[in-house]
Length: 264
Image (cartoon, rainbow, N blue to C red; front, side, top):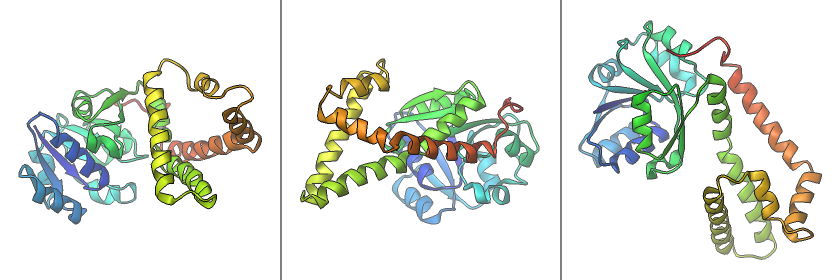
């Protein structure tokens, strides 16, 4: 299988590296943008080639991955010709199937996907929509796949994926507080990394138990954990989190028409 990438950023780099760890035989064509990433991959792997012509990437690939930034997507993609039988995977946030097809002028099969950086280690989960065979095959090699059944569901995964920075902002706040209280920085980093890893493993093992129930399971009545949850709620912590999610939702939905568009 030959996979072509138009746009070679951090996520494209992670996908290629993750696929290199699979047993599936494949080769890659990468656009030169970003030159530093594409050339580094080509230097590391013999089955990676950098190509300057985006149309040539499309013509020579079995699967085409669109991975340019939304701000420059139209300038890069409009005018390219993609045959209707070509399998296309779009990683471009906020751009709908309808918008992309209008640029290509064909009823090409497009699957939108939200791979996360840890696909480089074949970890994590990738949301796709619709349930396209090519996308499901590739991203299953990189971890777990969830195939959304509607544009509305897919958009909600897009909102959820925007919380990675928020996760580390929270951890950073915890770490900075105990450092200020006298804990060495190296110990703080080690402690919270291990603590959160353990909690994540618990969540994975108990994935049939709701997160709300796990709050109670980790908060002994009258104990310190219950106190922390109580004060967090009293200070408006949950409301601030929901406010952040709603702001992302508004931005995503401003570029989406979930009620009028169902991809073919």
